[in-house]
Image 1: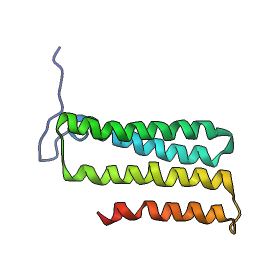
Image 2: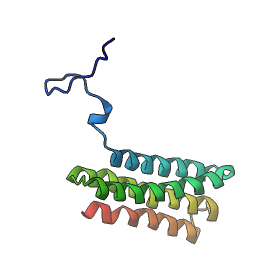
Image 3: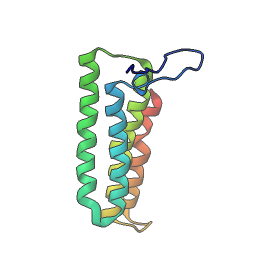
Length: 129
C-alpha cells in the first residue's frame, strides 16, 4: 500500500508540520511553554515545587536551543524573535510571578515593586534589538 505524502506547494497545498518547525524551534516553544506553566504553577501556592522544576526545564531548553542551532548550522533572522519572547517569558515573567506570589501580595510592599520592576526591565532589552 502506498503512503500518501503531503505536498509542498506554494499554491496552498498541504504541508507537514516538519516543513514549518525545526528541532531548534521545538526547543524554543518548549522553553516558552515551560515559562508560562511555571507562572501558572507559581500563582497556585501548592504547586511551587512544580514551578521551580518548570523554570529549570526552561533554562535547559534555552541552553539546548542555542547549542542545537549552532550544531545544525541553522541561523535565520526570524528565529531570534521567538527566542527573545521565550526568554522574556521564562526568565522575566515566570520568576517575577514566583517572587510576587511568595514575598508579598500587598500593593505597597517593597517586594511587589521589586517584582514589578523586574518584569518591566526584563522586556526592555529584547524590545531594543
